Amino acid sequence: MSENGFERIQGLIIFSPDKIFKILNQKYKEFFDKSMNGLQDGMKPIILALVERLRMTTHLLTRIGLELESTKNKINSYTLKQQD
Image (tube, rainbow, N blue to C red):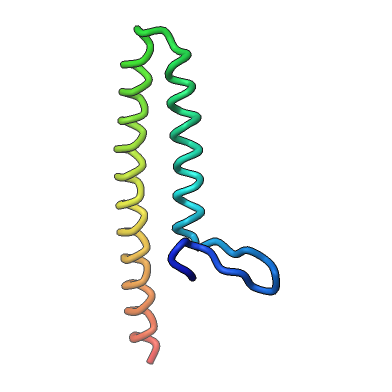
């Protein structure tokens, strides 16, 4: 990939996953900011608190998922060793 996050392959522009994430993240942020500007002032703290709680929950679920995957790999590895 080039430094600007994309390359051409047979005339097609191929973006790196990081570039795609940055584009989507920017579009999401613009949409969120625009939506927040349309809310009543009393609703903004509630929505921001919900978003922060969702962010924390997502982070915790990701950690749980990674730990589960690691545990499954250890169990599978142990099972394969026992079969030998």
